[in-house]
Image (cartoon, rainbow, N blue to C red; front, top):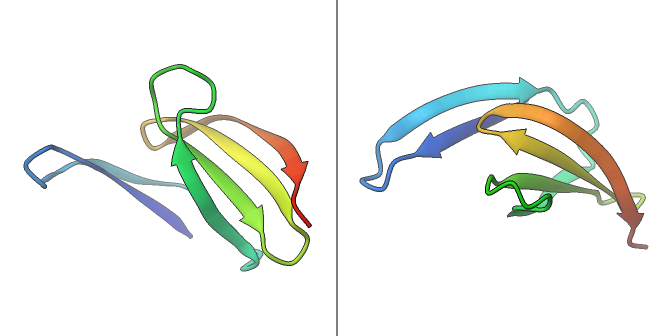
Amino acid sequence: MVYIYLMNKDGSIQSSGSPATVADLNWKIKDINDYNGDGKSDILWQNTQTGLLYIWFMNGVTIKGSKQVGLVP
């Protein structure tokens, strides 16, 4: 299960949520960055067994969309 905490600058929790369950434990978070230019952090996943890369486009703790973006052997 993926659980996300959005933090305030003082270290307190602004909001939290669980947007999805990842059943395959080979998927690991590789990076968090704004990949679609909307000013919000998105999550880049990589499957450590296959090298497949996948992005979750986020709006807070909600997945707005997702896309397979490549393969790193």
